[in-house]
Length: 342
Image (tube, rainbow, N blue to C red; front, side, top):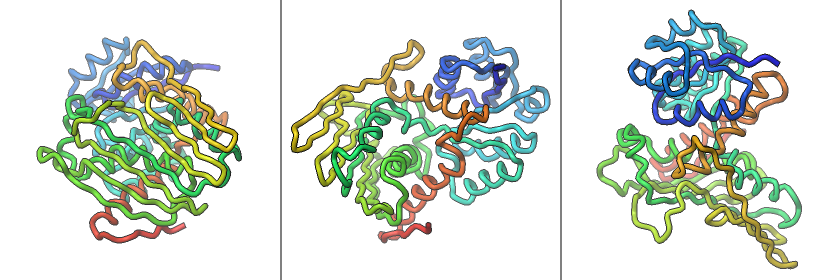
């Protein structure tokens, strides 16, 4: 099967991990990169031996014969580039969060549908090795019917050194981390019928909220608490960027604990196993479990692009997560429970 030719649009921080993850998957050829600051694009092209560099995205789309583009810009750059790719009928993979507002996200999905092209969101969090194993265990009947769950992501890691643009976002942690964690909630426990959210801003040098707690009620009746913080407050052990999950069922509990320990407790006893992520030489050790998850996420989307199955993180699916993010902001601003349409 011939390799699929693609281009990367945006050569900032995440491109240095997204690109080698594609090479790890295989079956693709990176033929061009674009960045509005061409020096950045030239640096990435040299690092990964990419033959063509552009400072204008439309020139790239006109000049190159592509099977897809991978958009890795900041959030405000997503919609214009998706629209441009759709104009030239090029399938799109786009970083999360999809868009800065719900109407724009809905329009991005609609544009790709009208153009008849696949549209995927690079939602890699659900593809982390320990989270996938947790999900597999959750599908068995070992802990019975799930009635409550807690998803926790709290760290003292300073995210703003690598991604200083985050400091200027009016909508911060719910948009950035909430996109991941609310997607996990949907993935694990099903669609949401209502939510209530509270936010806080601990660090005065930020424009947006750096702490959020979201209470969800799912279609299945499960209560899910999602808590997240960029507060940079000292913690005894900094397990960045691990996600912890604790689920209560009628027959027992299932926990994803620090250092990738998976623990199931039932009347028969406690079963414990460690599920660490694979390690790749190109991954930043500080982001190990996250960078490793890019590989299976890309693999899944590549299968979809080849028509070998339906990828999980389509634009249509991710739009449901986007709606939860914006419903959370609405709840925090109004101090009210928001009911989701089904």
